[in-house]
Amino acid sequence: MAMNAVDNATQKSAWISLIASLVILAAKFFAYDLTHSTAVLSDATESIINVVAALVALFVLRAVAAPADEDHPYGHGKLEYFSAAFEGGLIAFAALVIGYEAVHALLVGNQVHQPDVGLWIMAGAGVLNLILGLYLKKVGKKHNSETLKASGVHVIADVWTTVGVIVGLGVVAITNISWIDQVVALVVAVQLCYSGVRIVRKSAGGLIDEIEPASLAELAAAFEKHRQPWIIDIHQLKVIRSGRFHHIDAHLVVPEFWNVAQTHAESQILEANVVATYPFDGEIAFHVDPCEKKYCANCKMDGCPIRVKKFEFLKPFSVEHVVHGPTAANQPHS
Image 1 (cartoon, helix red, strand yellow):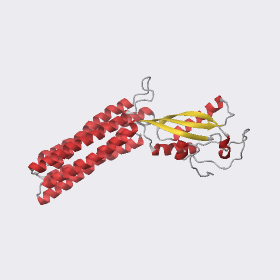
Image 2 (cartoon, helix red, strand yellow):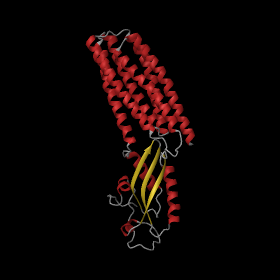
Image 3 (spheres, helix red, strand yellow):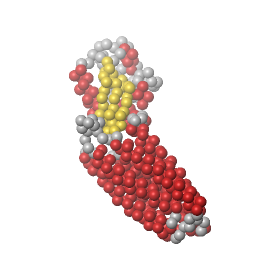
Image 4 (cartoon, helix red, strand yellow):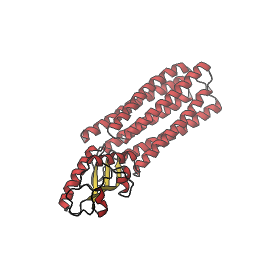
């Protein structure tokens, strides 16, 4: 899919998220107006976060769509991690507000009204949220959008919150014991706090270029798939993630008797093949190293004029190998 088509798809999803979040927010506050339930208020408060997060996501995805420029040579993709971290922070803050309201209601007492009616309204809002969350996760995964994936995770967590509120309202409707409603709100606060901190932690990792094992595994597999006899070794692999665009650095060991023009031409072909296989957009900057005698036993290059040892076996391009190099423990590879 072309870049502009991807951007259009993610921005369309952000608009859908915003409109759906507004509808769900209205339904939950209507349920609160009927029930005066602390648990329903807690769920509605979280939906306010959903609306704010959807607005931020819309802005961020429009900014991310801007091409790289002189001031931003790697593009604007890291804004996606900021967006996700911002959303996680809002979720954690909402958890504190909900926890305060729940404790206050427990201390002063709060009577729940029409829990059966509120239950059905919340059930409808929960179904809409479930559909929205699954949709955002699907689009976010398809287009490698950290913003949409974080929103999807949040919305799905909101669904579980709504399920808890529905159960609480059902128990209150049956038993007429109102304090159960406040206990449910406290449980919601704890769950939200955990969800928010988890989103912030993952987003912070993207901002500081924390190693992502899944990306390294994809790259190692791509290098292995497009391996040629002249590719003697690849190591010291590093990845800078900028949203769905990844800048990749690696040392590429080539025959020492090759000239610059041949090395350049072949390495560009390798880069194009690997990026085409890799699930993210990106570029690879190879630091070219000439081969050494220690590579001979693991080099399959035919007709090598400087070989000092017969070929024995290839070392597979595992994650351990491409990150740490030929000193990594590898098994023979047929």
